[in-house]
Image (cartoon, rainbow, N blue to C red; front, side, top):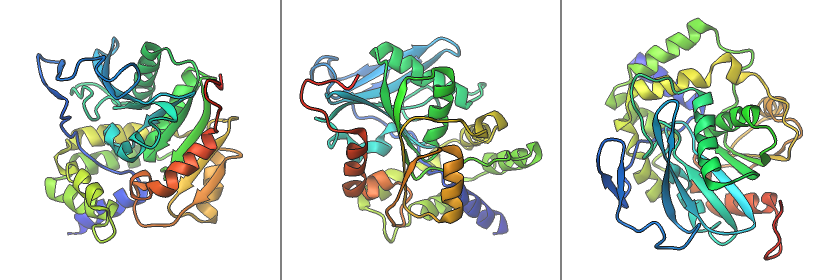
Length: 314
């Protein structure tokens, strides 16, 4: 019982939301490493509601992503820890006629490959983002990161400086600095790797409180208990790597939106994201872009900026 309580507390403090790989209705399994689409690639026109894949070479991984909408801005949405790209379901329609939006299943997530025997580092996540953007011909974009999603975006900026023009961060988990000791990281790794189905069911109730969760969000989150414990432990371990937790000197416009905050959290946020603007909306749900989308979506759109038809911002 003490072990279970400790697991729930640790997960809640980390602020990282769990989910599992939910089957996509547009695809069925084909040959190993392949997916077969039931919808022609051009059925909805270029840039509108298309599921796509890109093949990474090192390591050899297939990365799934979805392109929705057209518009003068490009927005790239990075989900949180273990989340498939459907964590942004409530953004699909809102931004459809406002921006070209690219939603990415990072390696180990959603419909992207998740093989054993590799390390799911933040550098790998950044490389996956770059592979998608290179295929799509994107040179500049606004990055959107939920929960741990800021970490892959930060590693992307380190590797490819100047491509991110603005950054939107949603109820993020602020890294630990100074970093965790190796002994502490090892303890957390073992704890996550040992999580049972029942442990994850209990943890899920702490992250999506059933009493206040929208019904569709509650249903969406029920897939987490099936998510492999070895995989969530591997990814969490690399999220707390020293080189990943070190603050980066961002110098672009950044907006951070929290459900709850306070002086200490705001000070730590400013340490990692200098001169950012911070919004606190209140609420009990970590997946704020879903539970409070009527507030979050206009905030994001106002921050990205409005542009006259036919006028590209870059």
